[in-house]
Image 1 (cartoon, rainbow, N blue to C red):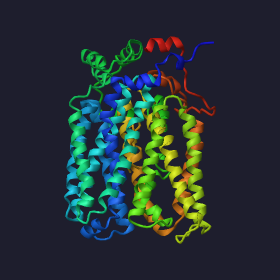
Image 2: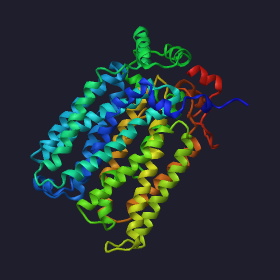
Image 3: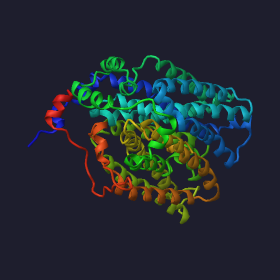
Length: 510
C-alpha cells in the first residue's frame, strides 16, 4: 500500500516554528480581510450608539439598513472590473489603490458631521473594498503552494473573523465614552490599517503566474525564488502551464470568455457558490447581532454589545482549527454538512418565534435563540465561510480567472466576504441581505429566518449535484475536474474526498 502524505510531512510544531515565506506574504495581504471584518463588526454597533444618534438622529430600519449596506452597494461598482485592472496592472497595484481609497473613506466617516458626509465616506470605503477584495484571494491563490493552498486562501476569511471580533470590542470599549469619539474611533483605526495595507503592497512579491502570463519570465523566476516553492511544483505546474497562457486580450474578450462552453459550468458554479453562501443570512447575523439579541430579550446597550462580542470570540476561536485543517477536510463534505447545520439553525429560530416561545421577560426560548445564533455563526465560519472562497478561487483557469472573479465579486457586493477567485458574487447578495434584514425583522420576527433556511437548503441540494471535489489538487490539475459537455455542466452526485498525494509526490514537493 502506498504510504499516505501525512507520514512524510514535517510535524505541525516544525511548520509553526518554520513558517514558509508564502505564509508571511499571505498574512500581510490579508490585512484586507481584517478590514472587511472590522467594518462588519463595528458598523452595526456604531449605528445603535446613543452618541451616534446625537449627531445623526435616530435611524429608521430602512435608513439603518441603507447606511450600513451602502458600502456594499458601492463596492459592486469597481468589483465588476477590478479583476480586469489587475490583469493589466497586477493584483498588488490594484490592492494598493483600493486601500488608499478605503482609508480616505474611513477618514471621512470618522470626521462626519452630517449624514451626506457619512454616506460619502461609506461610498469611498466601498469603492476601495471593491478593488482590493476581488484581488486579495486571487493573489494568494497564485502564490500559495498547492499543499497549503486551502489554508492560505482561507486566511483572509480568518482575518475577517478576527476583524469582526476586534470591531465588536472596539465599540464595546468606546461606548462608555460620552463624546462622539466613541463612534469615530473605529473609523480612525480602520483608516490607519488601510494605509498600512497600501504601503505593504510596495514590498510584497508579484504573482509569478501573472508575470508569466505577461511574458516576464525572468521577473517571475526571481519572485519564485522569494516564495521558495518546491522545484517540482515550479517546473511541473507553474512554468509548464503558465508559459502557455495568452496575454494582451481585450476587456470584452475577458468578460465574454467566462461563458464559453468550456468555462461556462465552472463560471456559473463559482457565481452560484459566492452568491448563495451569503443568502444563508450570515451578513444579517454579523451586521445586526446587537439587534438580534435585543429582539430575543437581552438588555440593550452594553449587554447586547457584550453578547455580540462573545459570538465574535467564539467565531475567531473556531476559525483557527478550521483554517489550519482546511486542506484536510473535503470541500464537498464541508459544504453539505455545514449547509444542513446552517439551515437547521435558521428553521429552529423561526419556529421558536412563530410559536411565540420567545419572551423578553424570560424563559428558555430566548436562550435557544441566542445559542442558535452562536451555533449558526460558528458553523458558517468553519464551513461555508472558508470553503466557498477557497473553492471559487480554485476552479477558474488562468484565462478567465480575473474576469470571472470580477463578475462574481460584483454580484457578491449587491452580499458583502468575500470573488470567483476570492469573493465578490457576494456583493449583490451581500447588499440584499444587509439591506433587507432590518426591514424583515421590523415586520416579522420569524420571516427572515425561514427565508434564509430555505435558501440554504436549496443551495445544499444544488451543490451536492454539481460540485466536484478540488482538495489536494494543483490549480492546473483542477481543470481536469471540469470535462467538456454539450451544455457546460457535469453532475457530481457521489461524495468524493480530497485527492491524497503519494509519498513520491510528497518527496518531490519537499
